[in-house]
View (cartoon, rainbow, N blue to C red):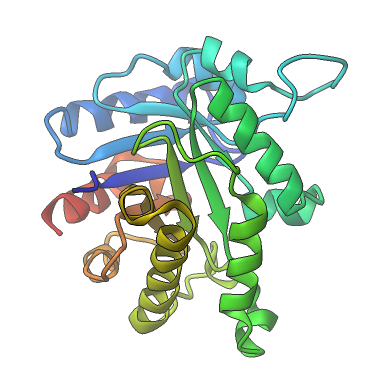
Length: 248
């Protein structure tokens, strides 16, 4: 059985005062059957680490363990700060920073070497959805971004399907569309990694996930949780999503 995962991406939001939200989340879900991950900005990693019931992750890492890379953060540094995971290949990184599939793969390999769980993001644009090339795009991203070596353990690799046109827009794909992509990902993972390994990797949905649509999203086959943006910034908004996932 795949353990469900509720992951929050704070993006470029949050200050030290926001740590109270993580603490409140931990208290509310101390005995939850769901894994909870919060990825705050890098400035808060050390301060956030060690919270009860909440894992802490970063939002990106460099592919090199050290070196002359001003402003970047390496996977070993993220691990040293107390974090246990990192988001990689988010569409905002792919678009704003020109990250390619090959770059995402190199970062994923660096994260794996440092012992970090890798949350690799995949997703199509509105134009690609309209052109009915979603599965082709997802296949290219998956094949190009996934490390060659299988994950060291069942929980070490997570894939997050986030259609770009749904992120922060309030627009959510039809449940049938989400089911199609998640089913496609599961089949492709099993074909590449074998039935056991491919069947153990958790698949998240992301894109305008909110308390009022979470239960419906989590009813879809092969949706093992969510990668949540704005609704993860406060315990009041994220907590109902976690509860819905625990009850799914």
